[in-house]
Amino acid sequence: MVSSSQHILVTGGAGFIGTHTVVQLLKAGFSVSIIDNFDNSVMEAVDRVRQVVGPLLSQNLQFTQGDLRNRDDLEKLFSKTTFDAVIHFAGLKAVAESVAKPRRYFDFNLVGTINLYEFMAKYNCKKMVFSSSATVYGQPEKIPCEEDFKLQAMNPYGRTKLFLEEIARDIQKAEPEWKIILLRYFNPVGAHESGKLGEDPKGIPNNLMPYIQQVAVGRLTELNVYGHDYPTRDGSAIRDYIHVMDLADGHIAALRKLFTTENIGELFFFFPCISIWTNLCLCLSVLIFIC
Image (cartoon, rainbow, N blue to C red; front, side):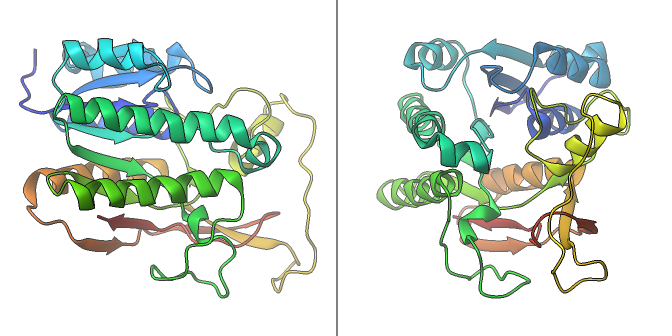
């Protein structure tokens, strides 16, 4: 077995960004545990992670099917394994669904994360990389967005991310031994170069790229394009994307910062994006470190 002195818990690690991050963590020499309730993922994704990294590195991967809202699941997980840090992806992320079902989003995103903090504290694991979202900026007055723009989430999903950022700040302020890095970004796309991992959400996709892909392979019949009066070449909007492997590496860079920096302070990083003409609003893919 490959030895590692640092064991990382990845919540929602069977999801799109989670699986790619787990691959990179294993290749970087970390031991990894995943907890996922398969709300929008499948066990096959974890199996494919093992295929990508091979049998030797797979020995450093553990999986638990569990839900952060279930305190018994967390007790079982933390009582049997000592974690050095958590990368927290688990949560719901569809804007339209959050408007229709806000209580569901408050339950999954807020209650689940608060429970996670409680068990991290109980078992003295006080390092977290939290996957937030650029939706916390709402509709900024100008584009491109700057890091110090006003935070004004405009939907229940975005508000859960904003609330969780504030909770993180409050916890760290009250207990300075905590190290928490918040990452804000938009629109991850792409797949691992092996072709064994990618984005394949359950049901009708909420994101444009998997929607296009499902139309291409015949799962969905057509792609509707909305918007015709944006100040662009064809009247449709522009959206910027970040490659999922860059994003995975960004999470690991943040994780390393937790282990190597005594006083994290505030750091800001931009990732290169690909601008694509789409039917959706213009937004900025940005990765921000805040503590």
